[in-house]
Every structure is written in structure tokens, then in C-alpha cells.
Image (tube, rainbow, N blue to C red; front, side, top):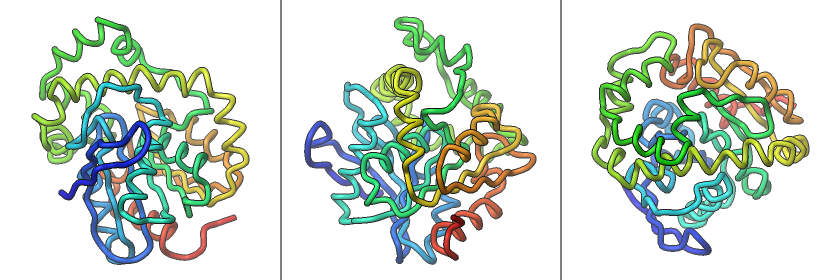
Amino acid sequence: MPELTLRGGEVDGLTVNYVVAGHGPAVVLVHGLGGFAESWRATIDALASRATVFAVDLPGFGRSTKPRTTYRLGYFARALHGFLEGVGVGQASLVGHSLGGAVAVTYALTHPARVERLALVAALVPGFSFRMSLGYRLLTVPVVGEVLARCGRAPLFKAAIARCFHTPRRADVDFLVDYDYAERTCPEARAAWLATARHIRADFVEHRSDYRRAIATLDLPVLVVHGRQDPAVPPVHATEVAAGFPRAGLRWVDACGHFPHLEHARVVNAWLAEFLIGRPAPR
């Protein structure tokens, strides 16, 4: 995987790893909490024949630098901006999965002229109703979170990931946990995961109304893709998100959990290709 050293502001000097493939209009894939660039491998393959596809390891995740910092959505958006500046992309379409959707939305709100289209896959978007699970809330408690994080092992991670699928396939679950396991579970990575889980609460709770108002003014095509059986981000959240954007369309995936781009890769990636680089988006 190539890597890029970011320049400017609080992200100056951070190294971001990424995957790039294909030729054509730029499409950037943004992973969710605990995710990584290669988790988009099926989507990269599906889009690369018609687009230049970038998938990034956000700071704190994958093989990218894992600094001790405040991991708010704005921080990730600034890192994404630094990445696009570094690779010379002036305008791109963004695809965000889970928390990556929140990052993509934040970037679109802060740099609307740089975003052509926005696709949200099983996305968690600030400004709309969402209640964190008990387990997630426990992880955000100081000391308790650190103790629980140190207890985490591959079998536990795989059990948790499997519950996010409607019909888990062992190959998918193993890949999402085993890929670069040592790098993604080192002390610095666990600290970054906990910091992100804790710090983004301000965006989703304290700034909920700010996001809701800003999203209502975002005039760009948006595609929302969501599994009807998503246990991580409830379908009602997707319904609210689609209604909150001025130009959004919503596509449901039946018999699908939190990973539509993996569970129903052929269908979902075809939708993404059509929306991002095919015919004009719906108004």
C-alpha cells in the first residue's frame, strides 16, 4: 500500500496509508470505526474500471499514524482534506460506511465545492436519532474502557463482527478481523479506537441540531444504502437521514445487516457505480 505524509495544521506530519486503483473520476472510500482501507476491496474492484478509486486508512486506524489526539469528526475531515490535497484531487465523490459516513458528511459540509456526490452505506450520520448500545457506552467510560479493550482477543472480535451480519460468512468475518491484526490491535490502535468512541459523542449529542440544520442546506446528490436488518445502525436512522438531505435517494437491501457492500456486494456495488459514475443522480 502506498502512503502519504499530510501537510498543514494539526494533521501535519501524519502518515496516511491508502489503496488506489483505476482511472477516471475520483471516488474516495471511507471506512468506519475499527475499519481499514482494504475492507473496501470488493467495491474497489467494482468501480476501478470506470473511476480512480482511493480507499484510505484514517488516522488512528489501519496502517496510518495513530497519534494521541482528539478524534472528532472535524479532525478526520481535516485529515481527509489533507489527503485529497496531497494526491492532487480537486473534486471527488465520497462513499462512507458506518462512522465513515459521518466523516464524509462532515467533509462535504466543510468543503462542499470539493464533493461531487455522496454515498452513505449503513452510515451513522450526526443530526439524526441514534442510541448507543450498552456495550458501546461501557467502552466510553474511563478506565472501564481500557480494561475491556485489553481483554479483547480475535475470537471475541469475530463474534462481535459476526453479529453485525444478517448471515455471516466466515471468510468475511475472518478477513475483517485478521487483516493486519497486529497493527490494528497494538496499544496505539486500541487507544485511538477508544478515543474516537469517546470524542465523537460531542458531535452526535452536543452538536446534533447544528448538523441537522447544516445538512438541510447541502445541495448535492446523496445515495443512502441500508440493510433492513442492520443491528448496529437501525433502519429508522437511514429513513431520517434520507429525508434530511435535500437531494437524497434511499435504497434498501433485504436480508442484510451492517455490511451491505460485503453481504450483497454485486447489487450494492452496481448501485454505487450507477450513482457515482453512471447516469445523473436523482433530484
